[in-house]
Length: 120
Image (cartoon, rainbow, N blue to C red; front, side, top):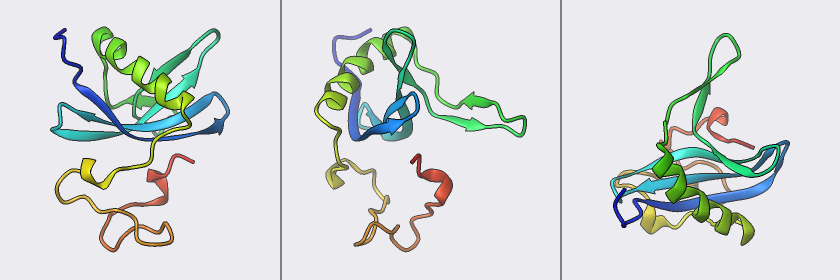
């Protein structure tokens, strides 16, 4: 692993959803944002849950795989922000062409956001 950390958490929503303690989005090397990471309470520690999709068999399949080095780089940042209460989205961190929600929290016209995109 290089000494430069390739991850930047650009949004985190902290709360209580069973074992899930936070949802967050990650910018990787400034090239793009991956949405849907989770901070999950395990038996002894918090760990990172990667984005996943639910199959027809009601099983969750990972759509992002992190290496051990990736977890080592990302987990301390996630724990720090969770302890600070989260992080709101900064428009300057959004990829080109992305849209912010319109005033009142509703998706902007053409944003392509559905209820399935909202983790809470």
